[in-house]
Structures are given as C-alpha cells and as structure tokens.
Image (tube, rainbow, N blue to C red; front, top):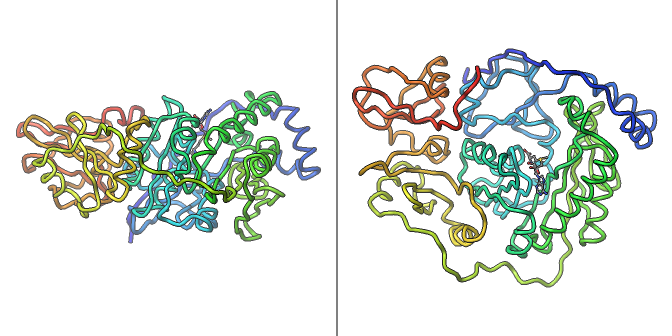
Length: 463
Ligand code: SAM
C-alpha cells in the first residue's frame, strides 16, 4: 500500500575544511594504520537515516531505502531529502536520526523493563528521547531534560509531535536532579555534550572548533555532569553514557571512571559481527569506515547495589490546579482512552498526562522547571474549549471526535506556513486537518473564514 512519500531534493553546500593535525596524530595513536581508513571515510558523503514513529502502520518510500540493522524502525535513505517539504515530517511521523545513535535501542531492550522511570538528561533536540518515549510507551515515564534554554523548546516541539504523552520536558541542571530526586530513576541516559569528532563528516565547522584542549575540557565537564546526577539513579539502576566522539578521554576513560569512582559495572550490549561495531574494554564505538553511520560511542553501566531509601513522593503543597469539570467532560470525549489520563488546568490550558504517574509528576512539577507535561489537550477560548495543537499530534487522539478534512500536499504546506486556507463546504467549529491520512493540526471554521490554528512558533519559515 502506498502510504507515504519522501520528496527528494538534494541540498548540501558547505565550506570544506581539513582535519586538524592533532586529531590525525591522536587517531593514529588510537587506531594505528586503520586510522587512514577513518580519515578517508570522513571525506565521503554522510549517511542519512530516519526512525519511524509507530503512528504509521505502513510505510513505503519513493526512494531506495535500506534497514538500519540495530533498530527495527530505522531506515537509511539514499540521499538527504528536503524534509521541510514533507508534511509528514511536521506531523512527527519520523525523526531524522543518525543511524549509529539508534543503537541505544539494543541497550534498553536488553536491560530496561518498559515500565521504567527514565531520565534523558541531555536530551535536545530529542533523537534519543523520541526513541525512549516510543520504547516505554504507556507503561513507563520519561523525563526529558535540556539545560540550554534555546534548545529546550525544539525538544518540547519534537516530543509533542511524537505524540506519546508519557513524557515531561524539563529545563534543569543535572545537580537539581541529583539533589532533589535521590534514587528516583531506573535509568539515566547521559548523551553528553562532547568535542564532536563524530560530526566531522556531516559538519565541517566542527573541525575548526576541535582542539586537544577542548577534549580535556569536555571530559571534565562530562564527569561533573555524571557526578551531579549520579544520586538520582537508583542503586541497581541503568546508566547509559554516550558521546559522538572517537577519543578515549571522553569515552572509555570516563566509563572506567564511572565504574571505579561512582561505583558501577560495565554491561555488555549484544550486537551482530557484521554490523561493524568496535567493542573495547569499556563500551562500543561506531567508526564511519566500519559502520554505516556517523561517529558514536556508547556504554551501559549498572549502578552498584547498596542499601538505599527508595524515592518517596514527599508531602507538600502542590501547585496543581484541578481542571474545571465542565471542560474536563468535553476534552475527555477527544481521547481514545480518557481513563488513562490525569487532567490539570493552568490558566486557560488543560493538559493530559499519565494517570499512572500522576502523583509523581505532580510532585516533580513543584520543583522542576517543566516546559511541557504530557500533551496540551484544550484551551479555554471565551466560553468554549478549543482543542490544542498537541492533541492533534497525540497518539491517543480520538479522530472521529472532530470533522476531518484531507489536504493536498500544497494545501498542507500552506497550512504549515500558517497561511489562510480556503476550503469549501465545511461544518462550523474545530476541524481536524489531515494529510495522507495522518493528522496535521486543527483549523476553526468561524463562518466567514477558516482560522489556521497551527502554532505560529512551529510554522515553516523558509521553503
Ligand atoms: N541526546 C540528544 C539527541 O539525541 O538528540 C543530543 C544531545 S547533545 C549531544 C548534548 C546536549 O547536552 C546539548 O543539547 C547541550 O545543550 C546539553 N548540555 C550542554 N552542557 C550541558 C551541561 N553542563 N549539563 C547538561 N547538559 C548539557
């Protein structure tokens, strides 16, 4: 069944830079003569890959694809499409994710039960968080955190488009988790800020920013992040540490330091020999001359068991406001499984978040800076409840609660640019717009015009 198309146009112009001399020397020390193969691979075209959202049941491409061997939903594309021109990209049907980093799936499948409470500490723009959110599904809870103010909003956008509702996006420092959430998380993912050698093929500017001094600084910062958050991981809990660098200072040295100084065991992650992964004494490397993807390193560790007090939701004054009953009754009819969601109201907005984790989320909301919680479901407008955009992205949306109108690709792109739409013979009120049978967002027919309700801050700006 033809369900979905990627529109291919290629655009890749950038200023080429040479590899730093100190990088060449240090990789020769690390890899011996094999380093030359790495240098050659870094001068070839980067690999483009996407990971599918389970929003889609069937997918076909009008370009050649190949499966990423370590993730069932991962596909390599033959070129780099202009994703902006694909409405399904904006509907969160897939995430453009570097193939190597999808290997996280192998670690969590091996060690993480789905009903786990997970912190993705360095989460923007959201590649690993969308993967975790899909894996945990409705059983688990994901706290997806980003310390950088500019980056946290794109993270929140990507999480809302993914549509699971099992995620709280926060904007906090690692130490705030360590200090306030002792022994809370079953798993913490630290995809650390790093010197970025793994990006040397994709982003030549990264070559200019690289230096041995920067590696040392990054390694120190990584340890300080790990130390700050360590207390938030349950004894026996899983730590996933990853970077997109090749050097051992930021990788193996840090993994061994975690094991020895913080107290953890390094765990094996299963892989097939023909995947080209390089296993070392502490973790796994993805080198572009051996693996189809960009540079990446990952290590899984189990925190030592020790006597501990489990995290308890403390008594306190929760600032959470119960939603107005009348509105609650309305918005519940917009969900497939209304009983699975707790609802709260803040100003004019009603938010849905997992009932199973209500107490914990309410408590965390009292001291964490939450950018988005679950998904926004409705907004009070005058005397009415209007559906919020993130409801249209949510997997639990009850589509037939709204009249639906299918858009052509041109109409869909105009909608995503927040232009005015002219569609004939529509019923009054909120209308769910779809493209290729996937929800894109809402519009409101007010009689003499159709209001485009696509979020202004997410609109397509350049075509
Ligand atoms: N995990 C993300 C993904 O898969 O899309 C990529 C994360 S990126 C490699 C590292 C992130 O760490 C950046 O978003 C950066 O803003 C954040 N960061 C930088 N300094 C940090 C710090 N001191 N503590 C925590 N996070 C930091």
